[in-house]
Amino acid sequence: MNFPVTRMRRLRRTEAMRSLVRETHLRPGALIYPLFLCPGEGIRKPISSMPNVFNLSLDEAVKEAELCASLGIGGLLLFGLPAEKDEQATGAWADDGIVQKALCEFKKNRSLDSLVIMADVCLCEYTSHGHCGVVARDGDHYHVENDASVALLAKTAASLAAAGADMVAPSDMMDGRVAAMREALDERGLQETPILSYASKFASAFYGPFREAADSAPQFGDRRSYQMDGANLREAMREIELDIAEGADMLLMKPAMPYLDVLSEARQRFDLPMGAYQVSGEYSMLHAAFERGWLEPERAMMESLLSIRRAGADFIVTYFAKDAAEVLG
Image (cartoon, rainbow, N blue to C red; front, side, top):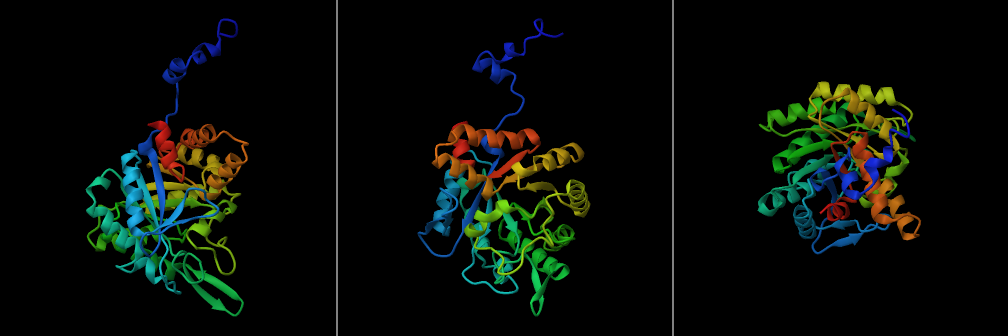
């Protein structure tokens, strides 16, 4: 029936009515907060391009994790900044690596039991050249070697899981890495550790602030030979299918807001638990608008997160996790 018999505004009249018919909901337990871990003690170093985000020493990271647990946040995603870097990303897979140490400490702390502790698996923070894998060079030319990189990534995943990670999250975009990680985990008796695959990670301009936070900018070239071309939706679906076939337990789309169509398409096709990463550039550009008074902070923050949930994300990795959890109560 058309107007005037049908009046769509009837169900928008009051907040109680709007709440009753609301189709998409946010909750703190569906939010994942990234943490950047650095060496030292008592360190809480501001990241200039990401307001209210810090590089944290382990003691400060524990405090941050306790706050997240008290807010009802669903989990943490850990990134490490090692004291030293080398060509083989040794700090990524060393048993005494910075994230491995943090995982051991977090798992001793019973107040953090409500958090799913996820460990990012990549090499870019740990390599001296800033690429996500092993680099072969020939004069001015270079190539990121896939299979040699996969071997180190699998070793890293097993090391992180052994240290206590509830889940490992490969973000490197090398071919075959999920299968290699599953094999490495199983060989170490870690069959219960799930893999959250960044199954369609695009080569995006929106990662800029993260590279300051993680000190992971490439020293030469770029990552377009392994991260996805932002023009390709069908290719993203192929990447996801392959990761599922290799043993991925969950999927993560990255970035979120510029690629909501990819998230929506994946949600229609695949039944695995699926999240999206609201990346540093998305967070920083909103904060830039907040600081200039161009956008209302709380409303814009919540609307951005709701758009990601509405597109199909079961959970969201976001630097807004603490602020949003406080709003949601």
